Structures are given as structure tokens and as C-alpha cells.
Amino acid sequence: MSNEYVPENGTITMFSTEWCSYCKRLKKMLDHEGIGYTEVDIESTPGTEDLVKSINGGNAVVPTVIFPDGSSATNPSLGEVKTRLAA
Image (cartoon, rainbow, N blue to C red):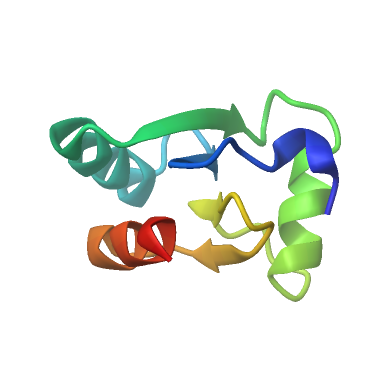
């Protein structure tokens, strides 16, 4: 995992696309909860689609989230994000 995408403590990096409804839903919930995130559009940021594919067994699945400890989750629930940020 490239360190440039590992977020600061208390925040996440979310790989997404403009058209992804699951991404929009997660962003809305994060905004409501006041959880900070950096969004990276895999269709406009070179190399990130390949990074997401490497995390997801060859599939460009979004949202893919990176946590401060460098771990990842694919299409996590808000509860999972909150739990993993609190760990």
C-alpha cells in the first residue's frame, strides 16, 4: 500500500467514482457523523484504479476505504468505519 493514501488518525481515504451510489451514501453518512475523509476518484487519479484492483482481487470495487493503520475495507458500513477508527 502506498503511504500517500494512508490517512491521518481519525480520518479515512475513500476511493470512489462520480457515479457510485454506494460512495454517495457513505459520504453522506460520514458528513452527518463528522468523520473526515479524503476522496480519491479512481477514474481521474492515475494509478488508483490499479491500486483498488490490487486490494480487491482484481476488481475495481468502490467505495474502497483505507484506514489510518493501513488496513482497508470494501463498501464498509458506517458502523464498521466508526469501529475501526476507534480501535
